[in-house]
Image 1: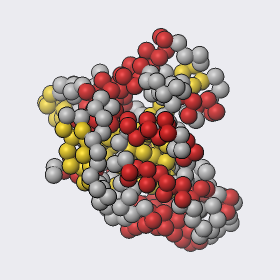
Image 2: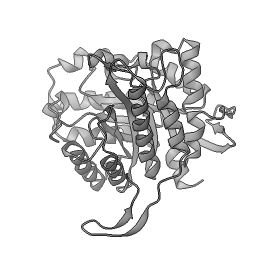
Image 3: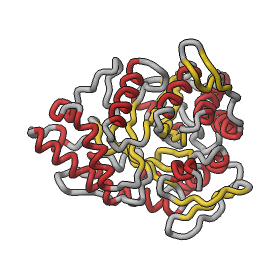
Length: 374
């Protein structure tokens, strides 16, 4: 098995994909063939990439919802059920049932699981957010939370968002409870605790508005370089990519992915959606499709970009309308499960070969691969 396949499977033995049939061994038997002409099959053919979706636990009982997730996606991310407020609502009292339900769904459907999220300033239970802890106490609480959650899912969750949204827009550290009490060291400590609990899981740091090169992504780049230099077990960077229609810089986006990959890290587009001012029109949907195509192509062009997850299944499942008044329609499927132009654009981009590049000398940049970014 090549190193590329080992990276993509992250602990799950994936055997072959022939004529659109994905065969997976997870220790629970061999997968049935995934249908041809689906996102999961075409992404796999593109250097064994995965394509994922954020899953809402309360919708899994809907067979059409579950069936679409099962058919189209090779990876699932829990939208909420592995966040701290749900999974440890009281000190030492763990509610694994919703997360177990998703992991069981993934196992039965031969899908990867991308765990989200171990340490985040938002969606904390009140006992953590409002607790008056010493640094030693909060450190112990955080380490215990990580250890219990990752140990429970050892061998079942292939990738974890260990840290989420640690930076402000200007690249300074966000003044979270963890940062204020523990300082910057809480980041490395979280990775070490997660690695000790499951040494085979791939561990990521995740953030938004790090799509292109700028102050926030520069800060992320310097942080992960420092973590790697210190021997911290970090394996990847998650680029959320909550985007706005027509605000996209293809060259900067791909160059940003590439520089993280050049550090030897995996890059995953973790929470992709592209919102627009409502109402949606044919013109807007066509433009959205081209932006989905460009984002997917950027991932395809970079060897270290191992997968893309969209943040929700249908437009009416999205978080966007509840947070951005008058905006919506950010996903791949309509409310009736019909495929939008964005779906077909993403599918076509996964089918497209990498754009040609050339190896040579660039003034001011030195030796490298050039020519892929639009």
